[in-house]
Amino acid sequence: MEWLMDQLVQTFVTDDRWRYFARGVATTLEVTCLALVLGTIIGVLVAVVRSAHDSQRGNKKGLGHAVLGVLDWVCKLYLTVIRGTPSTVQLLIMWFIVFQWARDNMMLWVASLSFGINSGAYVAEIVRSGIMSIDLGQTEAGRSLGLNYVQTMRYIVIPQAIKNILPALGNELITLLKETSVCGFIGLADLTKGAMIVQSRTYAPYMPYISIAVIYLVLVLALTGLLNLLERRLRASDRR
Image (cartoon, rainbow, N blue to C red; front, side, top):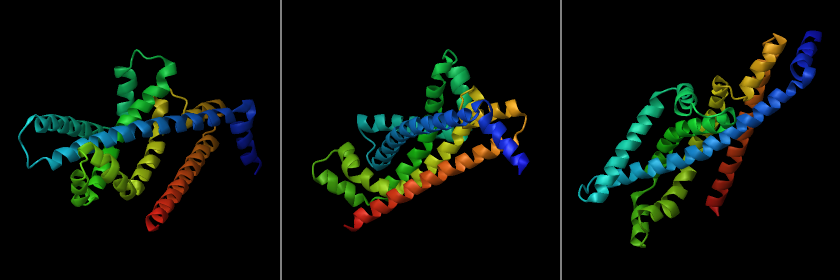
């Protein structure tokens, strides 16, 4: 028991080392939230482009189909490259090659951009599966009311699709939160990097790494609870 208390004091109390963990949690959540927003935007755009192209397969004439074909090819290339390479490698390329001119104060934004682009590829397929799950009659009804394709997607299809894909989006959010643990590879002081700094001061890896495992677990459980609450509210609104 004395050993455990000594480890706790060295890890959190001595020299206010708890600040490394507190700053790490804040940085981890910042990167996750920014990447989630960017990933959702990219994912929805890619899903809409691919769905629009699929719906136009029977009509292979006109400039519109040609443009959709090019955009669909770009989206497929993006999905192939992003899903076929590790997020850690993408982060290293983004920081040391694409943004090699960037300064340290831009590290958080570069990390968020990298994870956002990575997450967007997975969100795109999730959203596309949700769009495909909506009956074609819904789209036809929207078009019969005078709505164009974008308006039909915005007001009719996507709101219904979100309810179907919410669990999958929740899993992607949790995965994204855990994937940010590699931010320390570029020097960003996230939660994992904070634990590594503390471990380098105390020369005792047990408490810092067990602590961040518990912190990540708590964060995931909190997100899971919020997502379950949101799902219950959506189901309740459907019954009204």
